[in-house]
Amino acid sequence: MTQSSSPINFSCLVSPELSITDLSQSPPLRLGIMASGSGTNFEAIAQAIASKQLNAEVPVLIYNNPDAKVVARADKWKVPAILLNHRNFSSREALDREIVATFQAHQVDVVVMAGWMRIITQVLIDAFPNRLINIHPSLLPSFRGLNAIEQALAYGVKVTGCTVHLVSLEVDSGPILIQAAVPVLADDTPETLHARIQVQEHRILPQAIAILAQQLSTQCSKL
Ligand code: GAR
Image (cartoon, rainbow, N blue to C red):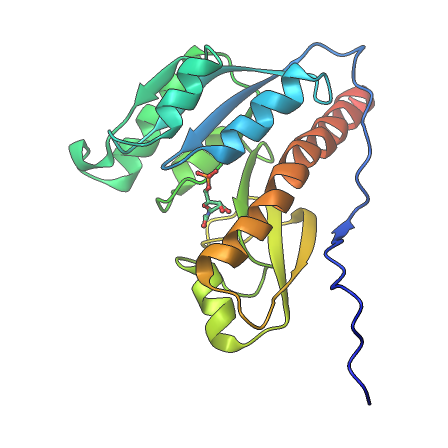
């Protein structure tokens, strides 16, 4: 078989399909965001709100690393950022109790773990049942936990991607809302692959929030 000289097709499979969800009649969903690092996913949410693709607002961001770059992004978008440094808490539960209290004080409807690199506990899950979501850089259930991209490269998969899911107690598990598949290239490094995965993360995370908003509004209208 001869090798095709046509360029690699970088278009990615996203399921369910991306669509603009019209929730303009509902009050904006109040999102509490948790982030540990760079915060590009936080920024993707802020941009989706600003461009009216997502009917939401972000009353507060919680971060756990004092030097996290997400703080500068929060400043730019005028979102209050609160540092809850896990090193200052006696247990994971104690940290999660403070996270819950902070989000409740800001009347948050839905919590988004947008690059939150700490294990969470039942305390947080119970406070936001079916309203707590996480983004992970693999096609779950493959490659849970830390270094998902390095795990995928080491395994030699040819397709990987990213997943947004409702959060269960087990790390990186729970009902899936949306996934995007990303091809792995022969010369990929963790950095090049992560960069392509992040392009898709920034597309599917706002979409996942819109899907959840739709699910929640359907549940409410049935009550
Ligand atoms: C994202 O790639 C996200 O999928 C990953 O951290 C990165 C945060 O990027 N999350 C996890 O690995 C969680 N298990 P960001 O700070 O630029 O949004």
